[in-house]
Length: 595
Image (cartoon, rainbow, N blue to C red; front, side, top):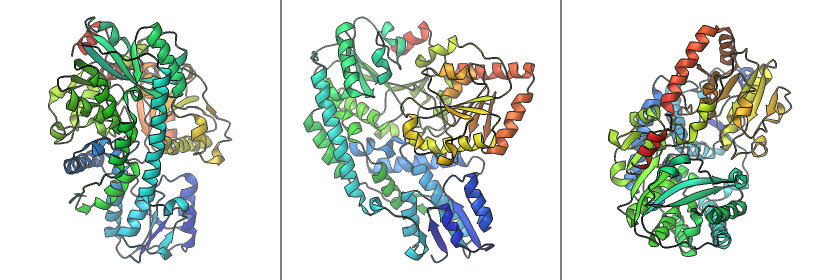
């Protein structure tokens, strides 16, 4: 199309003459203050769809789930179920964002067919899609390319799979070498799939961070085996696991321990040779086949996830009688293969999924598509943290209500020990982060707020799995010297909360801890397709903002709330949290174990 231009740097807008009213600018990136100034200087018309129409997210979520259902029906096999797209992981699959971007652009293009349209986009999948779909020639492409852009996706995936293969093979060798204790043939087993973090290495006694006191209530007639993901220094974690095996007589193993070389070779070639079937896939009458294919092979399938199938199959070979298994459940790709292996090799084992964290609208993995109960690897039952998360899951799911059952919050027993912080004027703001690289866009917005509000102090708390050193390189260097921004080094979040009188977050579960301690919370609404707010249905002691103006208004409003009103809001919000995370008492845990 001769009237469409595409650029990946906002500075390239300067090539267009000032005051050309027929130039329509659409951005698919977060616009920062400097970006907005450039747009105003050029005087182009910004038609970016920054604010979505009411209920658009809910309607689009249903369309998205329906689309995934159609792809699943056409690709009902192990490679698909171990893919990031099938998992609907909001942090690894960007399909909702890509589809919505296409829908938005098509709407604008049809609205201004005779105007010059300038697309600002950095996303490679989206850039290439627009160039091909709308036949944007090289003269109208203002894009900086590097060597990586010329490498075919097939070569990139081969290289990625090779690295995964090597890494997994090394971990298998290490687990066998360090864990000298031999696995025994056993009967009457309960398998618990959990996680082991590097920070647990120095703990005197093993405590499962996810299933906590569940072990105390398991019938003595059953032997418990614990299978874990190791997060952190693999050598040190395996050495610690070896000590636990000997000192505490616990049967605990990293999942790699049960995988063989032959298994991962099979995974490698099965994934690499996989062809995605896509037939008549559309949303709002827009053909999405090309977009879906490109995104599938970008997010792809991990050998680590696929290999879980063989880890469970080989574990089951040691004994045929695994009574039941508990696993943390978010519909992650490895979970699908974990469940599928049980369905194929131990049909009588009861599989109990545990919704162990928060649920936000973007948690599409929790929501069951129309045919999932017939084709998808699913647990027999899904136990939730509380009634609110159960309601959220059922709201968007095609399933029987009995599949999702209200249980208790095993991980959050420490919340009852929190001492309330007294209401105070806002001066110190805690900013807890998520453990994903795309949180950098939120951090940039936080630095903008700090720059515009020098009277307020911001304490940024990085997530344990994403250190500040890794995230720092993603932040605009102009902000890093601000004196009113500090990076927390405290081990416990409680130490940060007691120093603060407000919590500003994007998707972190720390907002729950903040409310529990009596702090008001503010959710920053980033320009995402779905909401990442764990408290998106909470109306008490919580506010939403999207820029500096709304931030300042909310701060001023909170500072003016009288003590009586504040106390009332605090009680309402605590009632909400108590339903969100139901207390794990003896009766609840016994019910959990005996499910």
